[in-house]
Image (cartoon, rainbow, N blue to C red; front, top):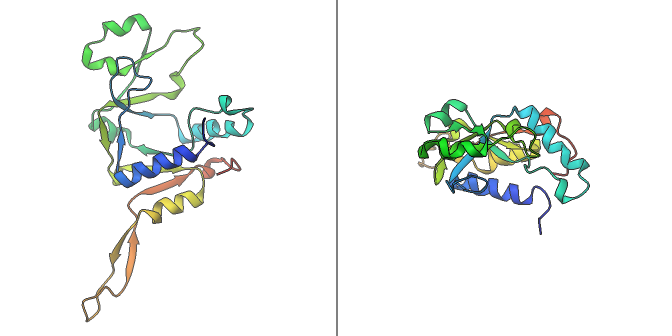
Length: 190
């Protein structure tokens, strides 16, 4: 069965931050290509999506996404090979050159499933190494943001005494974080 919303996502985010990379997956990608996927949805829209979990009648109605993730700049992702998906009919998949097929997402007006709101970007790769200077960690609360900022920090000396030992140590953050509660996501149980 599914665990309580947030448990799995929080653990996956922890693994990503410890390893500094996101593993590619072929789930939901026609052709079996391994990709890392991102959304271009504004962060304020994500907060609204996550708040739907509060009113879900059961697990099957919960949103597919949870309030834990990483954001990168579009320019950085593009420089690594990331591109927006191509929304098109299923019959058009075969018209794409093989090297672009990983970008295909089925879209047919009137069909029950429509993912165009995600504004998805993909990079075809086994793994994407994150640059902490180009990455913003997205978490549900200010407490989570504090934990990310200081929990993964690296101790650095701020001077040395006459004995050669550090006289003062501060913790330089490796990852920067933003909490969704800044955008109106409150009381969701995180």
